[in-house]
Length: 280
Picture 1 (cartoon, rainbow, N blue to C red):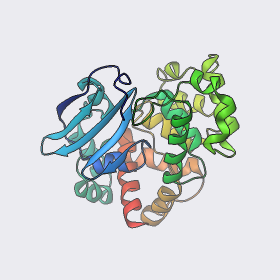
Picture 2 (picture 1 turned 45 degrees about the vertical axis):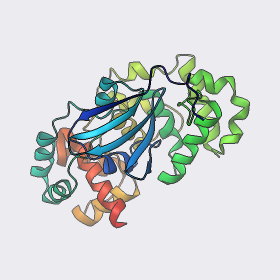
Picture 3 (picture 1 turned 180 degrees about the vertical axis):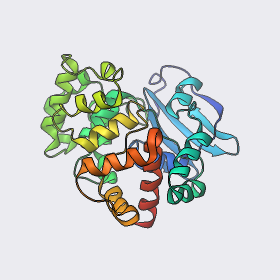
């Protein structure tokens, strides 16, 4: 039963007019708290459980999240025609992918939640990441009724003795260390948000458990640096198969940024989405 005191405001329904396709946007591994049941997506944004159902004009939202919060989360100010035009001009293959998947958007996630999530996302598949994140929320997060919010660093540290319940494996120690560093101010997620892309990535990589791929993911999904081009195993194989590019992470990521420019992150998502569907 849903706790009526869980949300910060009353449950409302609203129509969000936006050029967006929910399936590829919420289902391609950017964020890890979305579940699809029937024709709707259920997720948690901040302290609100939301249900989103796509329709001709955008989507209907049910929950306590406000309109502006939802528009910000889906980066409503991104000019998709311009973005798609630029990355399509850079490469005919990406042009074909974008035309077959209209409305896919990069999300703007809360920086702390994004950073903590991707510290867990090392050497593991998307399904396992989602399971670990949900376990962390169930163990430490605020009770919202049907689900729980992503916990603050203090909430994690107050119950750190229960971290073993989450089954994080080798990530357990670095996850607690991250919470400690953010809580004591050694790491300031908000201050990182004021940095340009290069400084953002460089700073993130000083954190235990954050390598170049995780740093690029957090820069893209948490801080909105759309020039970031994360390279995982799928993207690495795609770059080799489609463009003949191989080598170190630095070589492949720089190739993506140079080829696709200021919207390289969008190109990366189309490549990743295609690879996840085809199993390439």
